Image 1: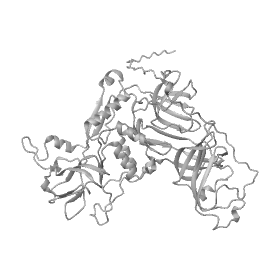
Image 2: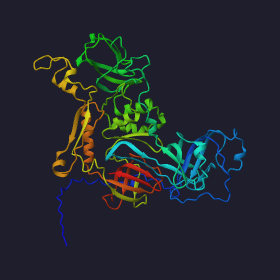
Image 3: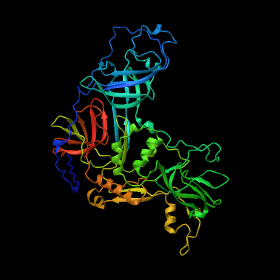
Image 4: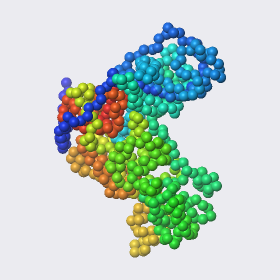
Length: 574
C-alpha cells in the first residue's frame, strides 16, 4: 500500500471579527402566503380565428401540483375577430378568450384561481423560473444578466394550439402576481412577452424578455441631412459628456472650415488644435456653444482636434456618472420617469461623485445600454428591478441598514451553503489598474508639427504633451504588495480596465475602494429564505443568522443574485 503525505504551507490571514449585531430592531420579512402562491397575466392580440372541433365536456383540464401557485396574465390583441367569418364556427367552442377584435387578457395559473374581483386564472401554467445576477464573467458588477425563461402552458390535448395563430403577444406586458389573504392580488414582477411558440412535451411557450430591450436602441437618433458633405450625410451627430480632450470634431461644410464637436449646447470650448498646435482666438472665425460649432479663419494645414466641456441640459452640466446615466436612459432612451428608482440613483450619486468623460463620434453607433455598461466600470452595477425600475449602484460592503433579518432560529432562513467566489476576485487581486483622462485622437510624431529637439520652442507643448498625445488613456493603480508577497502567493494582477473617469484622483479613489473590498475576506453564501416570491432585488442589504460559518451572531450582506422558482434562492456577499 502506498502512503502519501501532503504538506501545504499556510499564511494566517488577518481576520477582523464582525462587531456583534443588535438584531432586535431589524425588520422581519413578511410571511410566505399560502405556500408562496403567485399569479401571472399576459396581454395578447388575437390574430386569426381558426376553427377547431368542439372539446368534449368530459375531458378535464390538466391538474398540476406546485409548491407555489403561480398566476400569469398576458396582454394580447385579437387581430381578426369573429364577425368577418361568421359566428357559427365558434358557437360550440369552449374558449375563455373574447373573439372580438381588440385587447384581451390571458390569465393562467398553476391551479384554477378566482380572485376577489372575480378574475379567473385558468389552470395549466407550469411553474416558471426567473433569475437576475451580477455574478458574470468571473466578476461581480456590471450590467445584470437576466434569465426569464418562458411561461409554459400545458397543451396535452392541443387545446391551446390556437394561441399560436390567433393571438399576438409580442412586446406586450406580462405580470406575475401574488395572492393576498383577502383575495386580492399584488403585482410582484413585470416583463414583456417576446412571442408564442410551440414547446416540448405537449406545451405552448410564451417567451419572455426583460426590460433591457428598452435601452437596446441607438444612443443618438439625430443625423445629418442628405445634402450634408458625403462623408457625414445621414450619419449620426457626435455628442459628448464631461471634459472631452483631443476630440476630432466633425467637419460640416466643404466650402468653409466649419466643425461640430457636440450635438446640443456645450459648457465650453477650451481649446482648438491644428496638427497639435493650439490655435489663438484670432485663428477662429466664430464659436457657437449653443450648437457646439466653430469655424476656423483659414483652411487648416493638419488634423483638427479640440478640447471641450460637454452637454448642458436644462442648465445642468452633465459630468458625473449618475447624471450621464440618467440622461442616457430617460432622455435619450425614452424611459418614463416612473421607471427610475430615485433611491438607487441618489445613493449612486453619493458613491460615485467623480467627474466622467464620454464622447461618441459621428462614425460610431452605440446603444444606450452599451454606453451605460461603459460608465459602470470598474465597480458599478445596473439592473432593472422585478417591477421594471432602473437601478444603479456601486458594489461595496454593506452599509449596515439591512432590509430584513433572515434567521434559521426564526424560520425565515431554511437553507444556507457557502458558495465559491468569482474567479476574478479569488485569489484576490493585489493590484487594480484603470484608465482615466482619455485622449480621443492619439497622434504620432508625423501628425504633429513643430520642433521637439532639446532647447527648441515646441509649439505643441513639449515632450510630456507629445507623450500624452501618443497615448490613448492614462493609467492609475491601487496595490497592496503585502498581499502579493506574504498572504496570497497566487494573488492576481488583472489587466487594466478602461473607465470613463476624468482625473487621476477620482480613478485612484475608486480603485482603492474596490481593492480594499476584495482584500477584506469576502464570502458568498447561497441561501433559501422562506419569504414571498420576488421580495428581494439585487443590491438589497440583508442580515443573515445561521448556526455555523461564523454567522451565529448575524452578519449583514448584499444580494448579488436572485432566482425565483419553486423557492427563492439568493447569493449574498458578506
